[in-house]
Image (cartoon, rainbow, N blue to C red; front, side):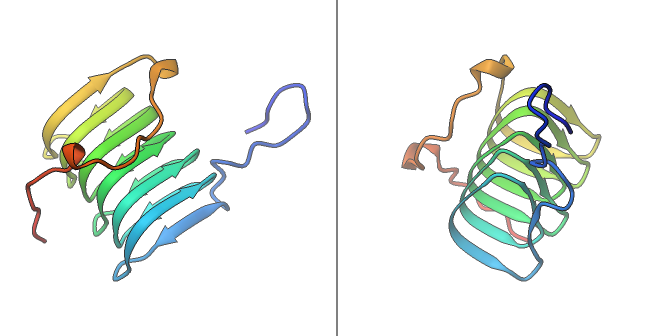
Length: 141
């Protein structure tokens, strides 16, 4: 929570700095931010954050994501880059490419794609969305 030496408080992952996309909301576009995100609606596009991402049970993201840590309970299609810990819950359905430093998967989750384990300092930045990164499958809910 505190950064050493300079007296500044690191509030990037603070619960009071939470961006929330609620159920019933549909966003098409790119989002960039410093704090945490919780997605219970639908995002089609990219999300780039220094904070933690939570995709709730009703949440869905189609596109590219880069974040520090993530908990996935809902649906994800695309390219997911997590600097730290990725927790995939039993209700999660993931299709695409995962790049992470650490991963935890609960029994019952669904993952179809490629998983890359790399050192934390090697995690790449999000590249612009390309057709080659798109997943041709469709998840119906």
